[in-house]
Length: 140
Image (spheres, rainbow, N blue to C red):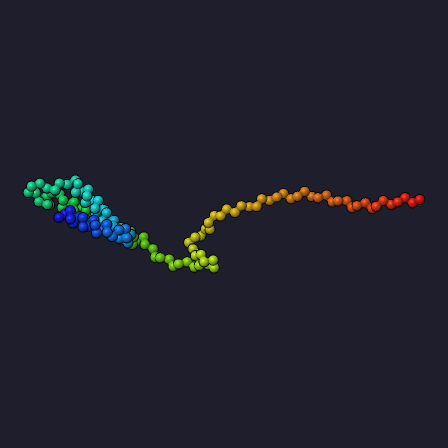
């Protein structure tokens, strides 16, 4: 009977996939802690021999501690999410280029722009002398 119940619970949780865990992380945390706690506690206690009742075997303590731990972690996770939740910011304004202006980005991304290599100025050109006047023919 217990095996059938455990398989039914595991298959129900497994059938929902990760979608349930993403939508309800506090319940998922409680289930995981409860499962691990129950498995480890069940391994260390005896089932009971002969006429011993369920409460004398120690399993009742296991179930009680596991339930308290699972519910406690679930509530603690829910409280932490409630405290840490922020309201969604309105979408940023778009500029003319179509990209979103993010007001939280206070520092622009570093961009390496190489500086042009400055060439030395050319050496000064010596002025060319004015051409000499043509030679004058000697007078006869």
